[in-house]
Image 1 (tube, rainbow, N blue to C red):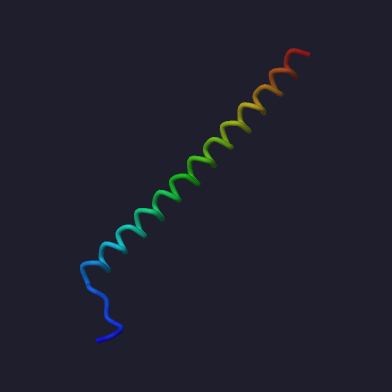
Image 2 (cartoon, rainbow, N blue to C red):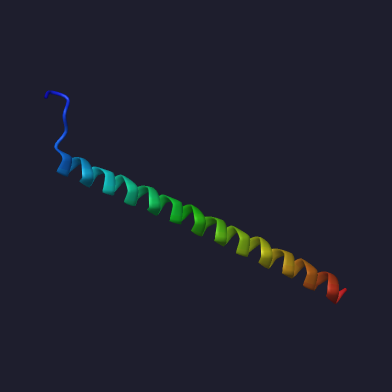
Length: 53
């Protein structure tokens, strides 16, 4: 019985770990979205400059 963990605490830690993992994934997705928007904006500006010329 020395190596056993209280099931209630184990569930809580699993929930916390899952929540933290989900938050990290959301942050990654948000950063990717921002980068994509930035690239898209830069490309549109370049195209606009070319069209002006």
